[in-house]
Length: 116
Image 1 (cartoon, one colour):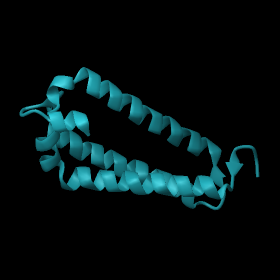
Image 2: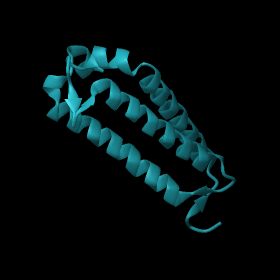
Image 3: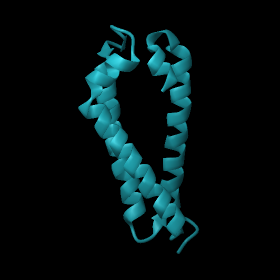
């Protein structure tokens, strides 16, 4: 093994859990995008001409792609640390961008949307 590889079982488990929850969230966003949009966004909300349900659908597709990549990273015999670092950076970007959206688009969320 090189310094860019690991076989840590705890890391493997964490990656599988990350993949599972990303996939579940993605599927929910795809299958229930209209219902979720009605619950969490004000009527008529859009970004760059994309409706709120369309945004959620595309988010779901991206999350499924991310979940697939994370699961692939977890399933290989020896885990590539560079891939784990990329996954960590993407997770951090997810959290930071969620905060930015809540601050910049506060008026576009319903009260339930801001609580979630």
